[in-house]
Image (tube, rainbow, N blue to C red; front, side):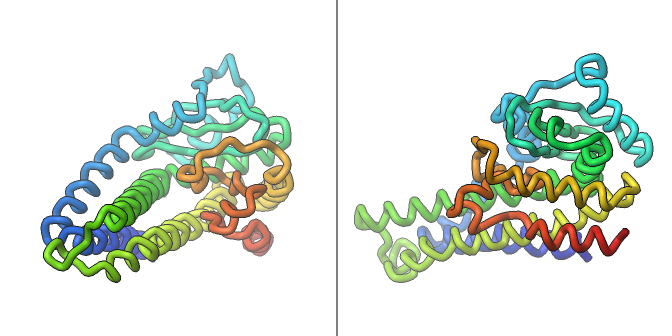
Length: 277
């Protein structure tokens, strides 16, 4: 059911982009929007993990360099019968973690130095189980594709605004001015709402998977509580387009960014984990 829902949401994002293209340039605009979407999705499929890891200066570590973290991940993947992902550390006081990669055979998990200072071993294990659940469910690819399409929609909508400023948008070119104005304003909002719906549903699924994989739902609940409290205090130099990838919203301390959070409330996540216990 969750897979069907995600497929429908992704189709909605693509359809929204086609509507923008049609409003801007008629049938030709729709074809350009479709082509642009396909190119971006292909790039996301093959290179999203490398881009994100480089963006945060993540360093791949060996068992000798990070014995506890590596041992935790190795134990979890053996239990889940998954391929061993690459393990990275991000040198930042922000306590958080994320996973990336197009499939379980090409995946990476990353933890910040901040999260390894804040959590105990059982809590860190639960967090990494959450990230590995994202990998096993292929959430990393789905959320990256959704973020890419949403970003493209916002970019195209900005182009629509500029076309109005410079006198574009007549009926012969595929739409009236009122329609283009409405599309330029509403399309990015709709894209963000759809993206949030995809990410939020996936977070609940990863929490449940982590509880099953680690066997300690309350360890994850404790970890989420600690990370939520630290999120507003620790500096978070995070690109908003990647905020959905982290286990808790890293932009919580920024009021405007947190208004459109891609994460469900931590209170609700903890309540669901408590019910599992």
